[in-house]
Image (cartoon, rainbow, N blue to C red; front, side, top):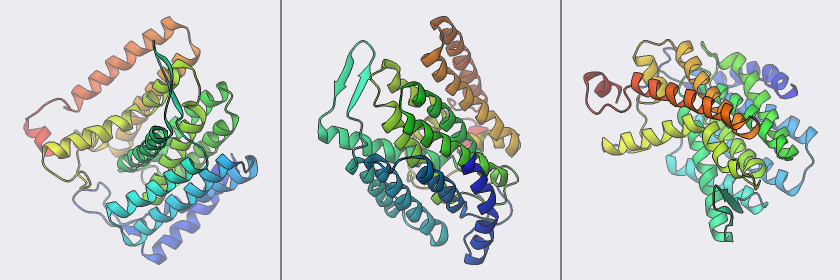
Length: 337
């Protein structure tokens, strides 16, 4: 609640600041919005996150890693929002932030697999796996931030789900961290849902991805429960699919994976006639359905999980068909690419 209130109070000031600094997202052929929109919203998200975190969580070694990494990745994102940077510079910031988690002992030290059990990772593999996971999640949130309220809403659903799971696993600090993040993004949606008056920019989307990564590594993946490896993949399944599909699509078309296009899931919904609001709400529902399945795997009887898994599969197949994701060559799919 405090995080949401802070963001609600700070965002108008950040909006005016972004206008004065010239941090404006101009419309072009690739983007959906038609008017210039300020894009430093990540600064409001940062303060909405950092203040409650410092107030409600002890400054342990692990929390120092989260706080330091959050500062670093927000600064790199803010510079990109203000003047623009190359993908290599952004990657550098992401790896430095990930390194903060590793340095302060937030690592994927082991994984628990069905029918195999717990597998200890060597220090080198643990460091590499953690840094890769952080960078992937950061870019997942960055990729889906292409429509009003999409990244903030998806993050809210994911953070609430991770908070519930983390507290059930006895990871109270990770649960509180996730709850703070959910409050932050929920407050930001007041200004970011269509029609948005401000965008979160890279400073916001990269921060959200970083904190979600810290929560999953420190609060979910450290459990020996068998399902903990599957849960983050379910909760973030739709953004992960969108990123993977974008990489494959650009590789197939011999385009740089860093070159934006209009083939993301939200673009496809928009191109087949959905309004921005309806497209975002459809994706909210899809993510919520996947998150419900993750919660069911943790808390519900097996038959309930099986029924929900069937529903998730049918809905996902229908949306994949609707968006023509598996079609190779049609006039409409060519236009979407």
